[in-house]
Amino acid sequence: MPLLATGLVSLALLGLGGRLLRLARRTGKAPERWLGLAFACAGASAWLLPLAASEGLAAAHAQRIALAAQVGLTGAVALLAVFTWRAFRPDSRRAAALAALVIAANAGACLALVASGAALPSGPLGLVAVLARCAALVWLFGESTRYAARMRRRLALGLADPVVANRFLLWSIWTGALAAIPLFVLVLRATGALEPPAPGAPLPAAARAALAVLAAGGGLAAAAGWLAFFPPAAYRRWIAGTGPAAGDAAGA
Image 1: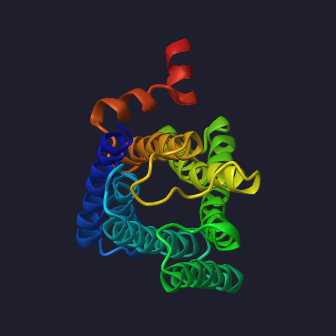
Image 2: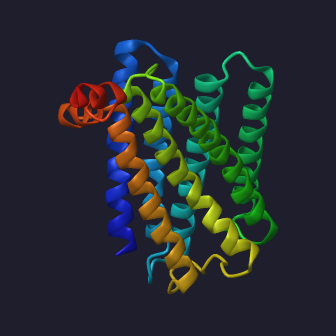
């Protein structure tokens, strides 16, 4: 069941990544390219985690699959850090330095994991790896939420398009859903409730809960991302009809 749910989420993320890459090819804009690559990496890697944890899978195969998943997810997080910098603070040296720091931390944790030969990060290395991912995703969520709040204030004053304001709200939803995944894992790790299972061994309850959050968070992120970047016409009409201008016209 975890493999099926995560597989469906992975397909949705891959589809969203592909659409964003096609959009970037048409518009020539770098942010869509970074984000499309990030979703594609996440979609290609997320389903490998429950696959590596499949009961009865040979330990050597499980280890290779899990390491491939970690490398792919590290790439996705690095791309999201670049996207956050370029989309929200392209002229900020501090943001550029923070992006570089986040990328270095994620890459270092991944390289240490590969060098250790472990299938999944555990102990202090596991905490460092999860903290590095949390830093990138929480930063993206914070920037998206700040812009969403700004657009809500502008919308209340009649200075913003409700469709654009809703897009930033959807950004805060999909970024928050992604950030919730490593945060949940971090809490489990910090409390000692979660330790990586042996390859091919039955999954403990905490690991199943982590995979469930991965599937739910990834699914919500994919759905909100699709609506933010490729909203159906009916959805745009509905959102446009909820703005202050529409309400004033109805009252008149």
